[in-house]
Length: 454
Image (tube, rainbow, N blue to C red; front, top):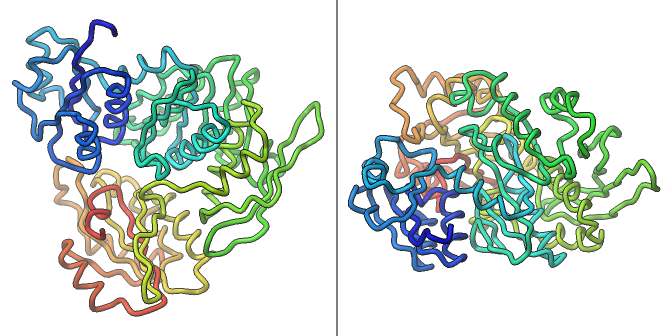
């Protein structure tokens, strides 16, 4: 890449693209790019001196040495067309990531849920152990104020993206699979093809490396039957887990738990009374995944414990944004039924019987259509659901979608009252009229809902 001077990113405001752009900027390359609109990632990169165009114009790429495009960008994009006409190399985000990973010993985290938090927890431990990895994550790590960090060691930690299948081609020394759920079926076409992509992912892990997996996930366990020689760690709450958690206590500030690390040749070891500042069993599982990775680097258990206890969290992962007059607002990225159910269950377990109001913005018509039954039954731990319009994420409006029927399905299956609102203004009016005291409001979705409530 020595001859490349100016790298141009199309869709630079995406969380994955912005991370790679920041890494390349920190490596000394000139970085420019474009996006359809300003967002927090665009503003962050601008502060670093990255020139960003709002809107896609063919003239923007004329001084580029290399053009990188995100999976959200159409091949008919005018900047891509112009780059091809000018014989400027054009590669996808995953190809760019693969080039970065060639010179590093890379740990990748894959799966339908929990990837961002897991990567953040691993990064926290590796940093405190002074291993200084390069990190590319799918969310803003609060301790970084960014989703990325350029480290000085040969270690690299990457959250993979299974939405377009590219994760299955990435070379890894070690890997994690947090879960395999019915997600991105619109791209794969079937669950079988989705599972096949995880087979490909595992095959790209070094035979000298390791794989950490959720013990309870049946889809993962079915895949593992094909891999007898790979160094595999199963983590979870059951006795079948190699890295097993036992809950000691739960409260509104988090979870205290013990971890038993089982060994074939030595005595089992323990990490006792980890005072973890996140709620929900799913977050304990994310911590177990991080521990499973870090024991491969022989990190002292006291460092692991301290890292977990001082973890500062991830933006939009049960982020508390308001706490006044006994009313608390949380912001969360949950946009899949499994994620919503896990978040609500975690809140319910620590709420002390406070009323829980869920504000839900569905993400993509295709996801609502495919998982309608699961969405309808995932709000059982909520006392009220406020249903927002679907955030289309570029999809065409599905005229067959009926929000009233969807609301009725949620009400019936989750046994909860549902209120429909039309827009941000409507939501504001609802809050003013209906919030009292002793209530928890959890706002969920992958679209504009975070911006609305903030």
